[in-house]
Length: 105
Image (cartoon, rainbow, N blue to C red; front, side):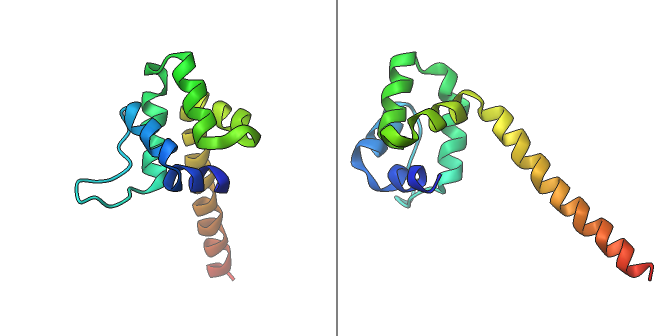
């Protein structure tokens, strides 16, 4: 993901490809948007792109070595978001459980 994040924000072709896909890379003040927000927008718009657009944009954003990982991420973006949310919630749950345990002794 580090490679993909870097390519999204530093390569002109990536920025152009995202904008052509309807994803804003810069905010209204001309500042670079958070890459997570950019990926969220792309993930939400992924199904509106045809397979050729998906392949070309994926290659531009991820490069050849990360292509299959990126395609999988985009094709299953809602599941990735759900898994991330579950991981964050379970971390908080474990912290709360540990705090209760420590308070009981």
